[in-house]
Image 1 (cartoon, rainbow, N blue to C red):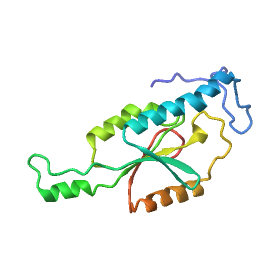
Image 2 (tube, rainbow, N blue to C red):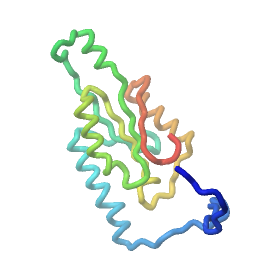
Image 3 (cartoon, rainbow, N blue to C red):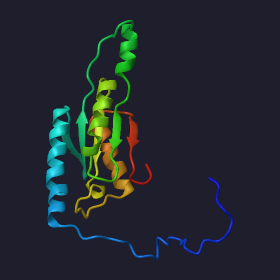
Image 4 (tube, rainbow, N blue to C red):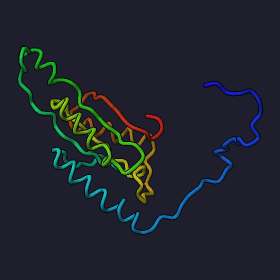
Length: 166
């Protein structure tokens, strides 16, 4: 990028701790859709993909076991066993409408790695819902640790999208 030298009087700094936060009123129908219709659609899609809903402390999550796979063409039983031992994936959705927009992505994961277990973390406080209980980072870590321990999972691969620092 080639920026011209000089001063731009139209440019203003954002002062996040001082400037007002812009907000908008939304109609009641908007909240009904985001609080009732989207979660119902998400539940249908995830159940159809083989997930079941669980709770760990204050955290809601979905889980699907990996499929037991035998050796593929040209693969020994030892290689098949190593593939079966791959850690599950823990996915944390981003800001938006919970896990609903990620259904195509989740379908691709299930197609490409059917032997992997999959945990989907539901975070209603960043899902365009009226939700006052925002867990602390310590509480989230405790819930995630409890979730993995309850399934006897010693380690997992974590992935996430767009809700600050992950």
